[in-house]
Image (tube, rainbow, N blue to C red; front, side, top):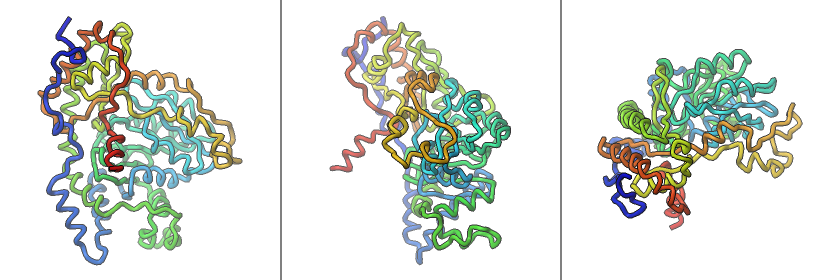
Length: 442
């Protein structure tokens, strides 16, 4: 038996203050000055900040067309609209993702079809993707989960074979690359989020990128009425400038100002995160009961979030909750996966509550699509194995070593951990929305 567990009165393995190491976003004088500069612009010229940002992101990504949005969710809605997704169309998507990857399919009155993910990468499983294609399938939303690029060559080959459009949800993957190509530039459309936790944080904001003029102009038509008069004279969408199609999706000028500053530092900050997590991967992967998510050699990944897999069978069937509780007592910020599986959510399980507004009950539907527990056995099993750790954006090696030692300590005391009676585990580290709501109510 090793050292006495902290949960049983021993010393905590993680003794260092983690406040600065885990602090994100990183806003400084340059960001504050940018906001001040824009606020002092005369004659509403602060709206031009979005255009300046778009030009800079064009240079960064190599995309022909860039359209800033008020958030990543509206960017995905715009992408689906740009592709012409409508009633009765099916769009394939993973269930293990944030809801914005999927719910905007419903906003187009189309039907989400969930595919399995590959446990090795957490990204969409290629075989199940192809298996889920029907004559009604019009698009796929691939999610580069946690910043690990999907197998885009294979995805694009399958999509071309069946004439399916590809949207890249790159909300986790700012700066990531697949075979030398920036993520978001490989599919028909790429979408990014600039929400406060993201690798490019503007507190709120989003982006759509594409090389296809038609897609760009249709996205403009959906929610950017002020841009329609500036489209080329031969554009068939200029005539909608007095109404657009009813949405207002432009980015806030102050968010654009912040993101221009953050873009300058993206690669260097990604580099530090990558170094920290590659070190963690190498050391945690040696510990019994832990399996890390390995990166293919042909990608340059980023770490918006950090996940590992807990293999209870390697520790005699030790309950995951006991393992987490012991680690949390040692000072480790760890919890279960924060993304709930979408196909099991009430909006899909209780579709009768929608009435006539339910997309998969409308007259355009060619086949009945259902959502049941057990539909995605691989994903459902994987979801029960995932552990979420912090992203360590500014951590020194000493803190990482203490985390590693905490895992070793708990594994070495597995028999003691088995005796723990767990009533509750803390829901960190990604984002404590409960505390945010409490602060708001005060």
